[in-house]
Image (cartoon, rainbow, N blue to C red; front, side):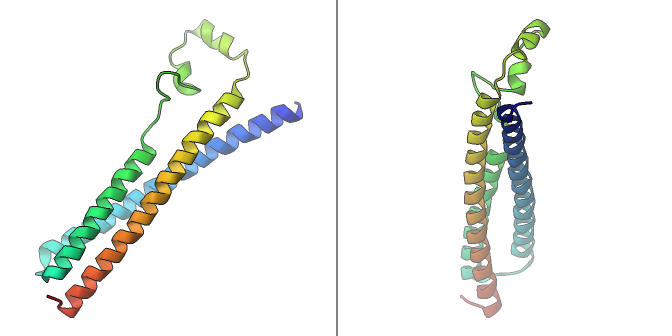
Length: 151
């Protein structure tokens, strides 16, 4: 195995691992956001809250919903559109075409495509984390307003 072949194999495995890592983080954050939404709903429907708490709480919930939508877009499968690379492409081939395809080394194309997908996922994940932090801050303000009895 040549150095270039080993490097391509390692890069391909690394970018696929980063995609899995990003999807795992997004899934965990989505579960966390769901728990925060459930908690906010429980408090909002079981306690009479001051107007300020309702306002900040509603804003926090709206931002959390935005973060959840962004996370769903992050983990949404991307089959590559009109020119899929990798597995989706294989699903459209006949067995003979598949054997012919394996005669070509298209790992560089896969690495570039998967890297671009990973970067887009990381950007969305970062935005979702920022939104989740902002929503948490709004919900904390709502709780302080409720605890302090703000009007």
